[in-house]
Structure formats: C-alpha cells, structure tokens
Amino acid sequence: MNELYVTNFNKNFTGVSATAANVLRQQMALHEVRLIGRALPACPAPMSLQTARRLAAKPPQDYPFSIWHVRRNTEMRAAIWSRDVLRLPIRIVFTSAAQRRHSALPRWLISRMDAVVATTEKAADFVPHVRAVVPHGVDTDLYCPAENRATAWRALGYGGTLGLASIGRIRPEKGTDLFVEAMLQLLPDLPGATALVLGRAAPEHQRFLQGLQARIKAAGLSDRILFPGEVAPQDLPQVMRALSLVVQLPRYEGYGMVPLEGMASGVPFIASQAGYYSAFSAQGTTGKIVPLEDAAAAAAAALALLSNPDRHQAMCARARDVAINSFSATREAEGIEAVYQELWSKG
Image (tube, rainbow, N blue to C red; front, side):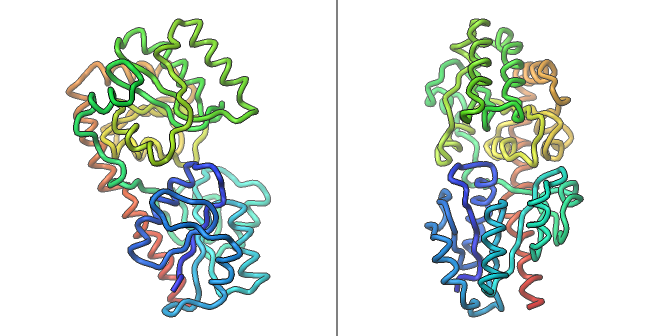
C-alpha cells in the first residue's frame, strides 16, 4: 500500500535523476513504490503531485506513515507542504551529495527533513539529521561490459578505432574546456582515437561552446573531437560500454556518477580531484586522479594508460569488480532501507 514515494521534478535527466532511478529500480522489489513528477527509465509510471497527496492521505497498511524520498529543493518544498500544511501522514528523507555549505534556502529546507542520507562523510559535515552515510551506487545490470569493445565502438559510427568521452553539461564548472584542452594535447599522439563531448550547453553557455569548437577547428581536430549532444538515458549504457576511457575534469562535483557508470561497463577513468572520484579509483587500480585544472596531467595519464594494453585491460576488469562489490545500486538501496526501517520503527 504505497509506503514509499520517490520524487523527480526535473524535466531534464541529470545525475540526480540517474541516482534516483538506480535506487528506485532496486526498491521496487522491497516496496510498493510511487514515482511523483517526471518519468525515470525502467521505473514505475509517474503520477502527479496532486494524485500522490490524495493517495498518501491514509497511512499504508503495514506502516504508521509513508516515506517521501526527495533529492531537490523543489521536492523538499512540496513534501514539507504535504506533511506540515496538509498534515499528511508522511515522513521525509533527503539525499545530500553536496560537499560544500548550502545556501540559505536549502539549509532551511534540509533542517525540516525527518532524516538525511549523505553520500559521503564530507557531505555529512554540511547537513543536519544525518542518519547514514550511503555512497551512490550504479546499476551493474544496466551498465555492463561489451562482449567486444572494438565492435561496440564501430557500431556507434563516430569513426576511429577507440573512443574517449566526457559526459555532462557543457559549462565551465564541469571542466568541458579542460577536457578539450587535454584532447588537443592527447590526440596527436594517439592515432585512431576519437573524443566525444556528450552533453548539451544551456543558452547561457552557447558562447562557451562556440569558443571550444573554434579552438578545435584551429587545431585541425574537428573530425576527432565531436559534440554529439546529450545522450538519451536509455542509450547511455550502449555508448558507455563502447568507450575505452572516461575522462571527467570538473572544477567542482558533488559526487559524480559518470566514472561509476564507466566502471560498471568495464571502462577505467581519468578524473580531477573532485567529487568522490578518489574513492572510486581504488588506489589507482580503476582510474587515475589528476590535480584540478591540470589538462596536461590528464592527457599524459590517458596516453600512458591507452598505450599500455595489458595495464588497460587489467584496469577494465578491476573497474567492473569494484563497481559490483563496493558501489552497486543494490548496496545503496540496502543502506537507505535501513534508514526507512529506523524511521518506521519509531512510529
């Protein structure tokens, strides 16, 4: 009886959307789960907030209240209104990944949560009501290695014999310019490699994008550094498993799921010292961490790895193993479930 409601109000499929979907797919085996707002891949059909409030007016049969799991400011506001103004029998759980002090409004909203799940110990330092630290996990069934990486890459049609990619919004915070700079240095020394910038630029970042494309054109690499746009969520696993390397160089990252999705697909990574990337790297056995703003170090690390097939293959295998055993969505769902059960046990 509708004991768990998960919100997803963002029309765009973001990293937050991906983590919510990963966990929700696991939770469907444990609870009657309702999705409020926007659709998520392979998840229950979403319902409106109005419908969810109507259904949540009565507590579920086996629990004293329903739990609403929220991940964004708009979702916290809607849940707080439902609990405190409409007086629905619900409790609110918030997942916090930000590794910096929140601004005033989010701080107030988070202070009204019944429980907070932090994704890292550092994130836990910035929020109250933390009941557990549970790292985000990746769906290791959805993201899995290709039977033949070379064949999978050819099937994408981007050209060359191997692919590298940076995935995310095209903007300075995500370090898209650093990725481009690294590829400008790397590709002349790595024949056959094609680099992909997978994401879209918002209107305010169009000039930033155009500047990057102009630099690439001036270097004569427009046919090897491509901007295919944003990949649909259902298509991303196919793209990910075809890559030879993921390169993420953000200037700031709250957590960062892309390296994990690559790892589950048997793809190692190069990443800046941001997010939770160091933990993913398993002491350098699944990925290489480089200093912030250091495109040259990223290029050198990528060249060293891709020029050594034996080391690359070992890191591919290790990446998959670490994703399954340390950072799976199943493990994340288990950690969150413990928080739910603690809330329900206290009535």
